[in-house]
Every structure is written in structure tokens, then in C-alpha cells.
Image 1 (spheres, one colour):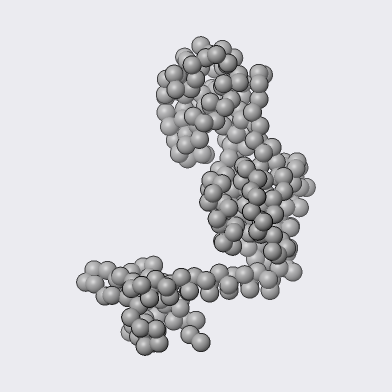
Image 2: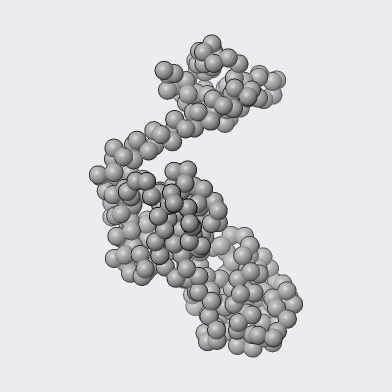
Length: 293
């Protein structure tokens, strides 16, 4: 059996690409790092080529790196199983779309304050990345906007999230001419969301591409900043709007047809949720913010 320290040395060296940085990162001497690699190569054959300015993995090196990553994931699963009876210590991992993630993350931080033994790990990601992360055990919980049909996953209704037309606090948005005067603040999903909502609110009008573009941001927490400053309007999911700190500087245009997205909670079907994940979901249920939890 290979020494686990050798595996850690190799994966770190493959990531950093430098013997000196690897030694510093692991608290070892450079000679120790070289020795670990020699031990591995005496068993497995050449794993990397030493170039003057970089290291290059051989095909055997790539295969061994994949093996190291599998061992690391197996170790994480083992630690999860061994510690799952302790609901207030360990990691709560969640990957979700950005809009609802803004609300979820702060709620989970409140849980961490109440149970300091917990560690919250959250990532914003689109649906396909969420599914891949949950299926490959990088995150225990995930949220997606389309219910998956993969038998390896359990999917339960989590919440409904309406799209909202958001304008500056003193702006208007009931007429198409109001939107023409304001102009559009775009974001990565902006045109798709705006098309879905505005085509129902303003049937017969030429669509979002006909409106002047006033700005763009790919940071979901900043999309409403130009709106609050009077620079334009946007269309966002309600959880993203609710997370904005200065609600008094923006306004949701009510009335008209609505568009509501459904969010699904997913996790692996082959094993039960850890007690920490169950605690987190119970916390969200008690807060009542996500009524379908």
C-alpha cells in the first residue's frame, strides 16, 4: 500500500508545479519532496518530466493523479460517514444558483453562529455544475432550477422563485416607454430572464434587445447597484433582489403577468443525508423563508 503522505506530496506538486513551493506548502524539506516522488516512481515508473521552468505529468502521472483524487474523495466520504451522527460538528456543503444562494448563505451563517462546530461551504454555480458536484460528492446538497431525472439523485421541491422587474426607487416601469427611458442593466442570465418576463408583461412589443443597454455585471450581488443609482432597470429572481442591502433605493414593479421558477433540492440517493445537512434544512424550515423546504 502506498504511503498516504506520498500521495499528498504528489497531488500538491502536481497542483503547484514546483518542488520548493510544494515543500513550503507541506512543511517539508525539498529533499523530502524529491524522496517521496522517487519512492513513487520506483513503484509506478516515471510520473513526471522535470522541465527547467515547469513540471509535466506523464500519462502514468495523470493516471496516478486521478487515483489520488479518488482516494481523497473516499477519505472525505469515510469522514462524513464516521461523523454524521454529530449534527453540530463538521461541514455543511451546498452548491446553488447565485440568486437564492445570496439568501441561503446568510441563513446558514446564522446556523454556524448558533453551532460554532459547523463549517459552511457554499458555491454559486449553474445547474449543470451543481449536478456534477453533487454526483461526484464534492457537495452534499445542491439546488437546481430543472428537476433532474438521474436515478442517482433524490430531487425534492425546495422553493418557488418569481422573476421581478426592478427599477430605481422613483422610477416607473408599467409602460414600455418607461423601460425605454430607463434602459436595461444586463447580467449573464439577464436577457433570457427579461425576455421571459417582459414578453408576458408587454405582449406585442419588440423585446429586450430593442431597449438601450445601460450596463452589465456578472457579479450577482452588484447587479442592482446601477439600478439603485438610477442608471437603468433589470429583471432578477426575487431572492437576489431581497438580498440587496439598500431596498429603499429600488422598487419592484408589481402587477401584470408573472413568471415563477421552481427550485429543486438534490442529493445522492444511495445514502441518507448527514445529520448536519438535516440540521441545516431544519434550520431553514424554522426560519420560514423557503416555505417548501
